[in-house]
Length: 231
Image 1 (cartoon, helix red, strand yellow):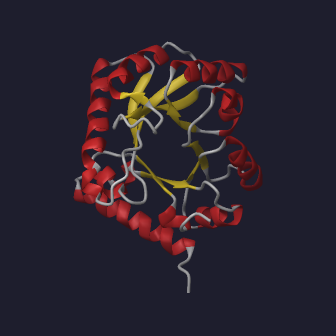
Image 2: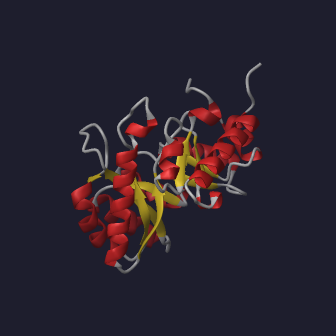
């Protein structure tokens, strides 16, 4: 018999709690983002019934349809995919947090679109901490300057950093990348840049989220462990 989404959510939340406690952290400081790319609406609803309070989507149009079907009661919607500038006008209306801002061009467009609807849009800066050419994100050495530039935009609120490290079968091999993002967060925080809060670290997925939590993650993006393998 297939395991229910309810039991999967409970198991993931238990693992989050254990990982946080093992590193001396309050489990409440870590939030589960249920990554729901291609996941049917009924399964997302089952996740929300099981206690999911944040849903993460990768595509604007897919998210729009799901938000219209599910609504916003008791759930927050995050954008966790690569955002194109021409989709910013939709993103600012749909998402409570955008995890993946990696250029001043994109930030300016988000700012412009947010200003047009009198909204302050919370974002994270996506950092390509590994330097992989196949991954989106600002280079780690350029991230501080990007944060400075974005801080001048009036309708954007920088809340932290996000990364996608290389894939390894062994979670411990990913730790240096998580640690590097945490170090960058601390560096930015010390600069005390106006209009910037370094409260969030979005890192860790199904295969490595416990290591991410132990290295400081506050948002873990988990899909497979909740919804199963993508169809």
